[in-house]
Amino acid sequence: EVQLVESGGGLVQAGGSLRLSCATSGFTFDRYLIGWFRQAPGKEREGVSSINNDDGSTYYADSVKGRFTISSDNAKNTVYLQMHSLKPEDTAVYYCAAGPSTTNLQLGPYNFWGQGTQVTGSS
Image (cartoon, rainbow, N blue to C red; front, side, top):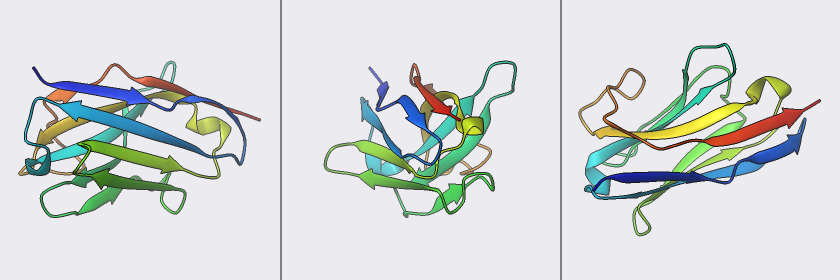
């Protein structure tokens, strides 16, 4: 059974930092992409960042470049999203998702999804 479990969300003041984790199981980790997405109330889901565990390539949305860093620990089958300089507009539920390594980093499709973790940036 494929599982993706996000953790690390919370409430943080503007300018603060959080690290999200996406623990995975049930598939061959190093042959998959892992992407982070977010959805704020009343807004469409947005792709934030992704990493190809096969070749190490990464993608960042313009809105998070220079502030967020994605990384992967193949030994733990876990992907991290380190977020710095958080802004109130980063407030959203953050989801991780997995797709095969041939998937486009930005466009997907992503086949498996986690349940999400809430990130709230206060002003």
